Length: 190
Length: 197
Image 1 (cartoon, one colour):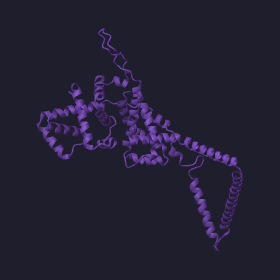
Image 2: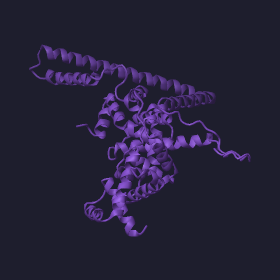
Image 3: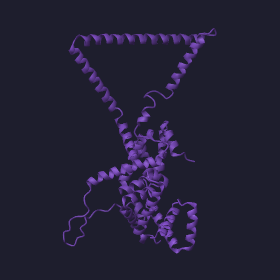
Image 4: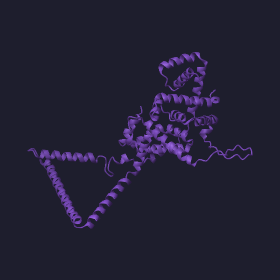
C-alpha cells in the first residue's frame, strides 16, 4: 500500500528528497493533462507542469496537512495557468482578417498542430470535437470540467479548491456536461 | 426540461460519477427499469464520460527525471544542517557535553577514579578557557566603548562620522538579509499568493 501524500511530504521535509519523485509520479499525468486542457498546447503544458512541481517543492515546508496535497497542487497549477494565459493574451493577434470581398472566408490560414504518432492512432475528429466543445464552455463550467476529468479531482477536492459548496460543484458539473452533451450529440450515438 | 427531468438527469450524472446517494440511487434504478428516455440519457452521458476520458495526452518520457534534476536546494533544506557538518555532529556534541557534565558530578564524589579525573580536568580546562574568553571579550568591548566615548564626546564631527558609520552598517546588514533568501522568498511568496487567490 502506498503512503498517503501527506506522509510523503513529511518524509521529504525530514530529508528524504528522493521521495518527491513519488509525488511527481503520482500527479504528473493528471497535472500535464489538466494544464494541456487549460493552455491547449502540449509543450507549454509540460513546461508549466515542471515549473509547478519545482515551485511546490520550494514551498513544501508551508504545506498545511489539514488540507489535501492534491488541492494545493492544483491550486498552484491553476494560478500558474491563468498567469500564463494572461501573458499569452498580450501576444495574441486576431484570427479574423478584414473581408477582402473576393469570396475568401476572412480567416487567416494557420498551420495545424503537427500530428504526433499518438494522435494519429486516435480518432482525430472526435478528439477535436471534444476539445472544441470544452473550449466553448463558459469559463466557470470549463474550469470545473477540466479539474474533474483531466485533473481527476474528486467532487470534495474541487469544492475545497474552488471554495464552493459541494452542491454547487455537483450542479455546475452537471450543467457543464449537459452543455457538452448537446454540442457533441452526433458523437454520442455509439 | 422540466424540474423532474432535471432532477433525474442529475441523478444519472451523479450515478455515473459514483456520487449519488443510496436513496436516490434506488429511485433511479426503478426509473431506468421503466423509462426509455432515462436509459437513453444514461447511455449518452456514459458515452460522453468515455469520450472525455479517452482524450488524454501521454506524459513525455523522462519527465520525472527532468523535474528531479530541476529541483533547487529549497530554503527549508538549507536550514537543516550547516554546510560541511555531518548530520551526527549535533548529537555527538550533545553527548560530549553530557559526558563532561556527568564527569564533573562524579568527580566531586569520593568514587572519582582516574578516568573521571581526566574528565574533570578537561572540564576545568574548558571552564577556564570560557572564563578567559569572556574576560577578553568584556575587556575588548570596554576598550571599544572607551574609544567610542572618546570619539563621540570630543567633537560634533566625530559624532557625525559615527552616525554615518552606523547607518552604513545597517544598510549593509539589510542588503545582505534581502539578498540571501531572495530565491526562496520568491517561491514562498508565489505559493502564498496562490493559496490566497
